[in-house]
Length: 433
Image (cartoon, rainbow, N blue to C red; front, side, top):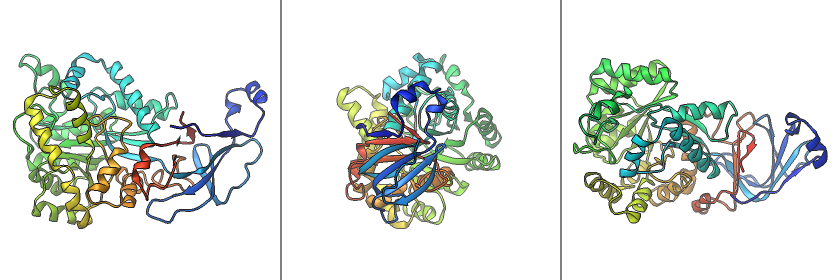
């Protein structure tokens, strides 16, 4: 991020003499050159945003003078937006393929927690003040979520799924690809299930760990070490048991689904969002259009694949590489089919497969594959906040909401690529350095 001029309305010497708590200004005044307080609605010109105790206190037209003792942040030459939201990340790793598999057996939970913190900061500095973390076996992001909420460390707001659930031998079975004598160790996470009752147990396990949302896999995956394809890998009653149990506890459900049969299975079970949604047919498109389920496209996974393969032709096992090449060839086709049908779209990258801190690459791909820049911006703000159940806190810049605010050099509605260079980030009222 580029440095922003912050003007404290107090003498530096006097500030240094104060206790730390007293150095926090009572209020922060932000002078915004252009303000898109709610993507999809008209932009406001020169505006003043007042922040107090981590929340937006007021918004006024023009540049209002800061009161004595307040801090003034001068963003008159910037375009101001709500903090962005990535609905699909994996913070504990930035590796992939064989390197990612090696990390699973060499990195301790403590090391993964430090990875999560570092990747969280890359994401936050890129303007994404909230993320939904959809998979972490050792609880590192659950701990990071709590540490951020407690103010112990800086990072994005995290909505966490704990460990993702699948049937045994399915996409989220961590024992796949290892020798037989090692598999029981990796299968001991308790996230695989067989039969409806066992799937209820798996959901309750994650809720007991503190998960905010439940994620499960109804189909095979691109990165999993299994040759069973990308179609359905869970029975109807198992998926229904997962969704019903999660909803009983007030938790939303995200489903990893590539194949059309697995997407229809998840939609019929009542999931809240479908991640990837790569293969469609007419029946699946019709069912999705009638449902309330969100689509999280995760298009920028292909960037991570391309970069790793370019750096190392053997970065992935041959059986995984074949699926990757297929995924690259088909990326964006589903979005092109679902946007005209009115399916609700929420922004998500699958960062960790793609690179953390490069989340905004997704905007360009969304526009290339059928969305307008305004629709893409809404997907990463208003829509994603709705999906996460946090519309009362985030997604727009409005009085009473969290002071999650970013600034870029020019209008992203004219060119979404400007979101790849964020010049200023405020998260919950704290300026991010």
